[in-house]
Amino acid sequence: MKNISAITTDYKSNHKDICKVRFKVFVDEQNVPEELEIDGFDDEATHILILSDDKAIGTGRILADGHIGRVAVLKEFRGQGMGKLIMKKLINWAQDNKLETLWLSSQWHARGFYIDLGFTCTGDMFEEAGIDHIKMIRKL
Image (cartoon, rainbow, N blue to C red; front, side, top):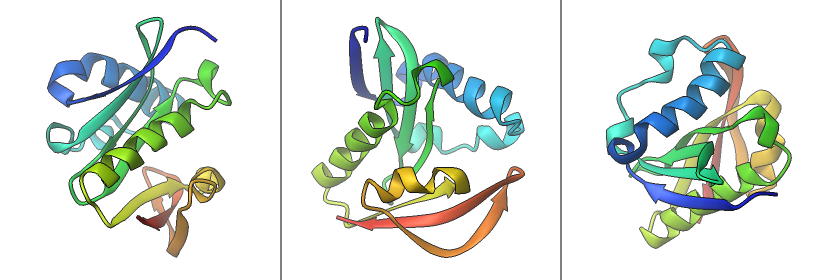
């Protein structure tokens, strides 16, 4: 494992690195349309950026209402705890900001990852960008 660091940042300061990771994962790998990936909420979100020797390898964001989204880790760094690191940083931010409930739309295949972090499924499965999702919540 290289030198891993996690920074809490805003979109304006690190949008190139944030977009590089998200586009590689969502647009290139998962075929999410570019216009759906950029949704207009980035400027108001708090972002986590994971760096390996100063190279962006993972990201995620949280909005003031507790909505977590755009959690992405480059393929070659998956299975090494990077996603959990992103989520722990987002959860810590939420706790520091006195949020009571976190929510997210998990891709169906990834729901076990979020269950391990204390989230529970709510509602029915739905499709977004051609991918099955489920809404999940966690009380803090």
